[in-house]
Image 1 (cartoon, helix red, strand yellow):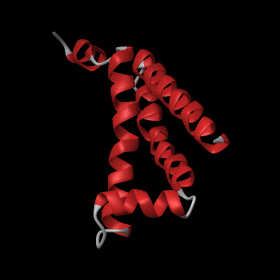
Image 2 (cartoon, rainbow, N blue to C red):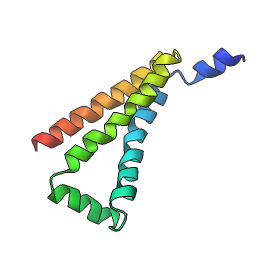
Image 3 (spheres, rainbow, N blue to C red):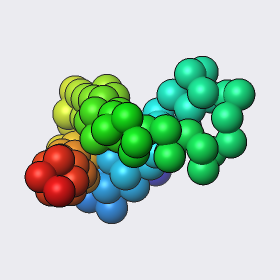
Amino acid sequence: MNYDDKALFFNKIIYGLLVGFISPVVFFLIYYIFRFEQYSFSEYIRILVESKKLVNVLSLTVLPNLGPFMLFINSNRYSSGRGVLAATIILGIVIFILKLI
């Protein structure tokens, strides 16, 4: 197995979907740790819901998906890039629906 085979091993939509869904969760937790560490996680969610900022924070957590997407596309892993894009679109639709509620 040469370098190209190893590099393209991760060229599957499922890997892109995993990265696309895990990345926003990680950044949501990072936002919690740096901004609201004095509160418990349930209080953090309650504060975001009561202040009507939950949808805004969720929207911002999807933005870091741009990094893995560009990495996959520039390294010719187009299927993984499609997975990240699909996850971002799904999360965007969910956030849009939450915004309407």
